[in-house]
Image (cartoon, rainbow, N blue to C red; front, side):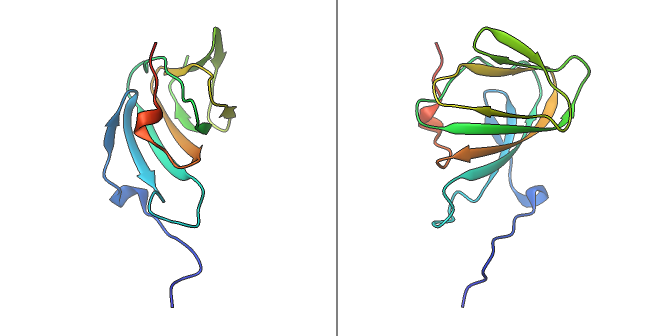
Length: 116
């Protein structure tokens, strides 16, 4: 019988290079969970991009002073404890160094990252 829960230790998840730094992604293979959960370390200003199908929820764990998120034409100051839901089609990027917990629904698909 399988366990009634899933467990991930992000310190054991290999990092993957992404347009904004390094992402550690979990639950991709869990069939009955509709999304993925990422811990992403943003090491520099990310490239402005959007998703056609994915909704992303950013929860800020750590931020350097002056860290921001660009959402469309707007720049928002961010800080630990803040959470932003980003719908499909919204161009976005992180500005500055930060560590973010990202919940992606449906499951993350790297072919759904679009750059102008």
